[in-house]
Length: 273
Image (cartoon, rainbow, N blue to C red; front, side):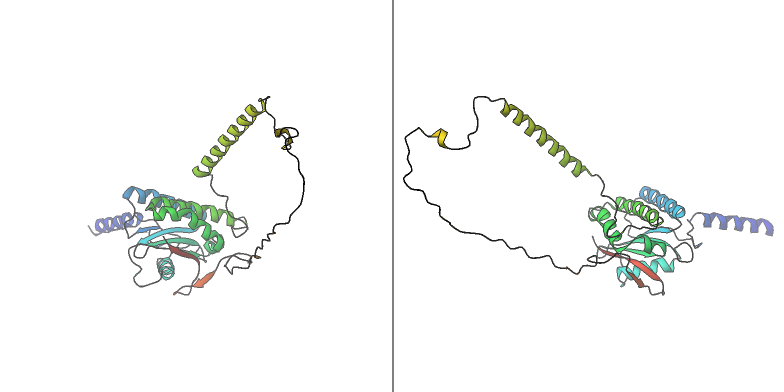
């Protein structure tokens, strides 16, 4: 009887632990924590599958966390502590990237560690935020997180070549609907212009004249005095551009880092949405 009970307990333990995705460090914390309840059940399932697939393939934890409040911490402190205290990260350097959303003050923050610091430079982080901020502002959270995960995959892959995305080397902008519309309008204007020029060239009865003498009746006007007068002059001055002192001006790029409360080195940054 004791053996049967032991086997039942062992089976239940296996079933319970297998219900949670295991991170690289062997813990049982999911790569998706939606405490702010921003996602539907179906969206959570699809996003978690994406995060797990990319994390295992890239050997770097890609994590999304949403909270209602930062509990008195700054976004950076909360993101770094959540990453460190939950044991995320592959390898000795704890490689990974965490995306935090706090609805209290509408903060977002990305915390990087290990290979994540190398892959997501300061310039790369600015590029990434440009891709998902509009979705965050419009409440399209599932889309924003999907874009984040895809960009992490792209940035980690690029960093493995030895040349991560940085100030002078960023992904090409996607060919959006607006750009396609502008090109279509431009093409339509060009076609209309060429058609008008063709029709104008077929008008044989009217020709442009180089001077006004052909429009004046011969002998009807006679100039008695000619004189050239200098009226005024205008000088334009343009100020020489100055160094704005931005973090990207005149620098080679790279990632800014700091030390978390646990003593680990993190990179990343964030803002409002």
